[in-house]
Length: 205
Ligand SMILES: N[C@@H](CCC(=O)N[C@@H](CS)C(=O)NCC(=O)O)C(=O)O
Image (cartoon, rainbow, N blue to C red; front, side, top):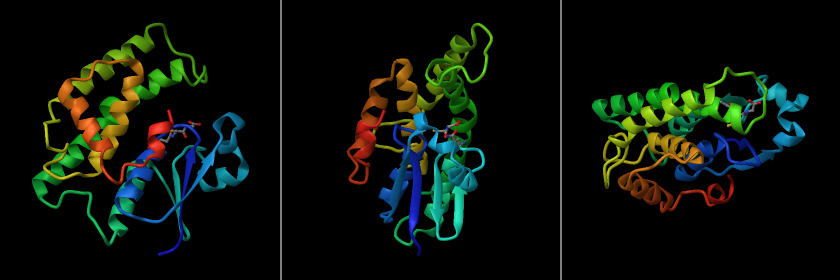
């Protein structure tokens, strides 16, 4: 199949979505962790892999893949052991719907909040941008709470890539101390108790 190499940061990032997918699919891989503070993502060797200088990047044989969700779907497509995308058409629609929602209605506002708070002044933002971004996250993620039911997954009754993606988004949003309903807390803990949940994800924040 060819070696699979995942480029990730030393801290928690979208690369953990891919790492967890690899674990679920039981795909042997090697992780290369770059140091953002040393600008290793801007080194010319890395920019040759991904000119945008962002992670994750996955190298599989002669294929170089970027965009965390697309990489997860690629891994699912090449997996011979399991399928983490619903087979039923309606469930597959729900799967795509939640992914699109997360990508457009939640992740961009978390990104803005991070840029303003943690990632240091790369852009200038108008006054009030942080509180507006957090208001959007709080409002939009509340819709997701209604999709999480006890003993059920986000896109039907089977664990899928959508659960990995939303685990990452929800726990990312928790940095901003939003209240998470009890049934969602239970859902998160049940995901963490999966055998394939990567132990590395617990320590990296
Ligand atoms: N849409 C991309 C976003 C990639 C991205 O922005 N990754 C962040 C880490 S989570 C990064 O590398 N940031 C460094 C930078 O923007 O220079 C994906 O899902 O893979």
